Image (cartoon, rainbow, N blue to C red; front, top):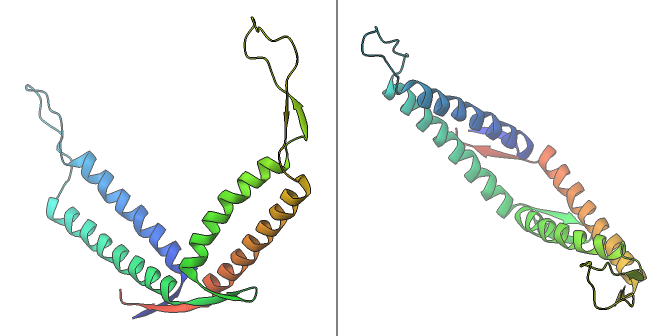
Length: 171
């Protein structure tokens, strides 16, 4: 049993994925070779059993660590403001709120009145057209700030959790 933080688990997962990519690339490069009929072939060093066992062992470790991380994220809770939330709920909610924040950011940058561009050279309508916003700009700005603050609170709670809370992994 090994104790680790989420931050360490993610770094370890990245390292294991890089190791796996090395072995998969080695297999792709070494499992076949090209030789001319009238020349002595240069056969790359390749042992299927060794490569397959190494990749399988890396996959097993990756699976164990991801399961432990997912289990911990689903069962551990932290306070975000005055609300207790599980780590996985925070991750889901942050993704949703970041999408909403992008929409609000675009809305808050709109001018109350903007001239529409004419899309063709032969426009029948020579009268200028304007696009108007159909919402309270101040309300959008307030909502953007609220969403940004909530995301920041969630991120700070996650950062604290990822750096300090340990869980056990049997690798």
